[in-house]
Image (cartoon, rainbow, N blue to C red; front, side, top):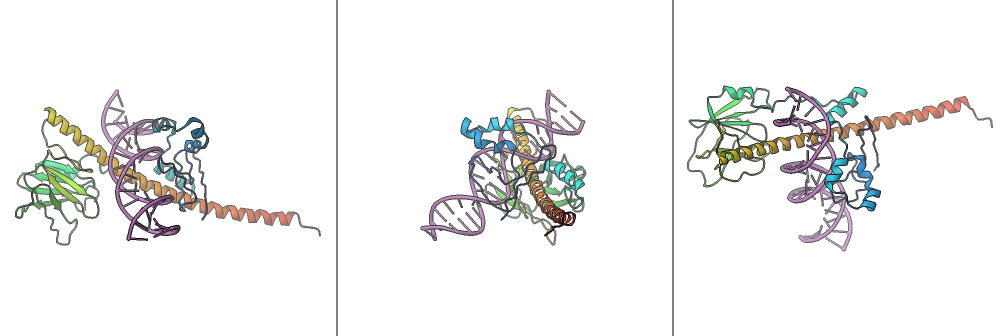
Length: 283
DNA sequence: CTCCCAATGCGTCACGATGC
DNA sequence: GCATCGTGACGCATTGGGAG
């Protein structure tokens, strides 16, 4: 296993090596995987000495020390401009921002909800549920469903499942008299829960406010909760995307290291050849 | 089989960067 | 100035492999 240390300085901003500090445990990680994790910051490496002399630096102080770096997308795109073989990270269309335009075409929904997967669920009066997939470039568009309320749903939280893109297009929802549609799980087949508005929201849940004014303290609290859940959901997605970019960026750096190593080897060989030519031995 | 450890991924918080 | 985004840091859970 190679212990590669990659230092690609763009304005002194990038340093990738195997010295990632996974957590505050600061467990020594020597010679791990072939993926050279990004060094969190150069200052982390300084803790070898400073930590002994000054003790543990609390996280807040450490954060102040941290120097910010450009986003991975920027860095990788810079690399790609330097090296033709390096793929670019596509600029994302800001499709998740705001309500997608196709929502506006819905038939007067009483409530609009957004799931953590970016889908929009609108419940109209009369029991019609409409699902919008903003990321599906309009192919799927809105999916109008009529609630079936088949039989008596189990008491308490009702699991709502729909099989996205099922063959026959049948997607069943159970919606009792509740007002909140929540997503209970992520994955290939999202699971939604309908809960009473007063129920504690699970993680990853977003409830959108129904149209109307919010004035009472309870409504303000609900609005604050809704905003928080929305922010958490967005940040959750952003973190996922950031990690994906980071992995892509590290892969890019690894491939670049490989290319440069080959080039370096060739240059060394070429140098040796030229040396032999210019200064032949006279034995 | 159980325990331990390292690796990995995820959610969240904090905060700088950026756009308005 | 504020809202939003991107990302480092942290804590936690899960997983896989090795040792006993």
